[in-house]
Length: 164
Image (tube, rainbow, N blue to C red; front, side, top):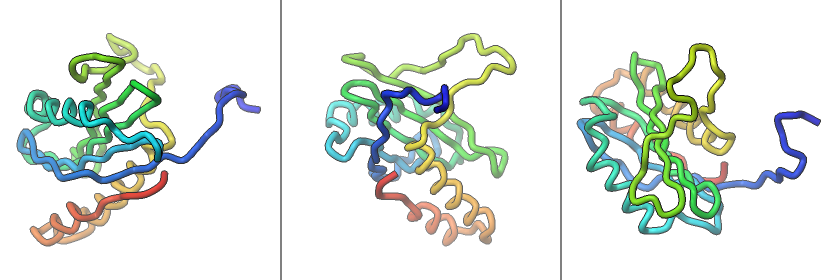
């Protein structure tokens, strides 16, 4: 048995659902909801996500950014908002936000502030990596394309909807 896995942990599938293309802060972002199949994101939390795009995207995203956002429901009342953008042509950059309980908005998440050099930090869980893997492959196809308007449209339409 691995010390990295709690003996009481029981893994189960979650559902990745593409919701919409959000253009905010000059960026094109594919929005996904990631939830247990029987526990969708409530409307009030989805509205807080939309508020984040209106209020924070301009400070987080740059003109021309392309990427994806994962709104991940983790249990009953904890959510991650994982904002991932392609920069440096082929690098995935990430900003993490969260909401817990009845917080009125998403807040920036940093498990170790100030960050220390060389400290192992969380990135993506196994479910989130299902979306990341799909988006990595989609971006790779775009990079290998002529990167014209038609190729960008194909990238925008290349989305995941299914079990992870």
